[in-house]
Length: 306
Image (cartoon, rainbow, N blue to C red; front, side):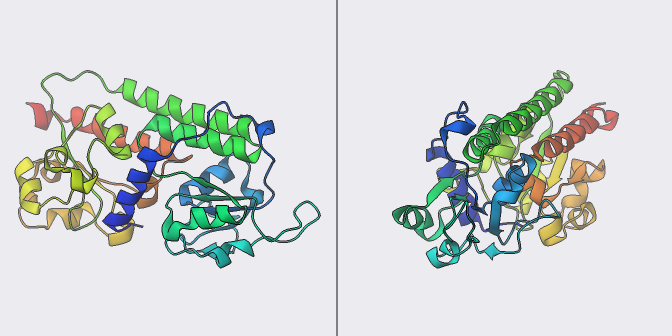
């Protein structure tokens, strides 16, 4: 689901300031949590992927993967309250309190981190990743915090390997400049190379048309105009608003002026899954594969290069 720009910006700014725990953090260095509340869809996916799913007793309202096994208890991560968190856990012999051992957030709404820490609840903030390396470090951090470091390291290595192989699969292409437009919503919000997904595209040799329109005020997420996009004539377009907003290549082609855009003319408008495109957890490799396949197809299109 597409988030308001102010929410996305808050995630990125937080990511720049938040120090991760050491990647060498061992499972024995912290008590294993029996009751986890995950207010981050990305963290929820990661926890299930590394074997910590059974420890989660509540998730945020946007969590939708894995498709089976998510807890029924839901909390609004954009408007959380202390009351919604402290009574979430079932009392057991190993966990006699209703308070969670660990709360994971991706956005500090309502200053929930400070409030929960004030009553003795451990809170970890994992804001939006700013690079592939940052993403895999977060996975290792969750492994160390939950007693699943071995699986977390294996997952992180797999993702890092996928990114490395995909980047290596794109041959040098002197004289072939691929301008790309990445759409976050139908009002033409985009992202620059300074963002997480933007960095992935840059590693594949793409020239992001949003970079020239960015200012310090938009934190890497500028709103472009239709006239600017048409004038930039991108050879490749990624749509990250297919689920939230039903945008398709046909919809793009029907916009004023877009029928002449190279990506539209040559069928290089690519649908992405909104969730995959906005999360940086265990399915990151799938997103990277999709980006790489689109770049390869564009480079191989002789109509573009004569």
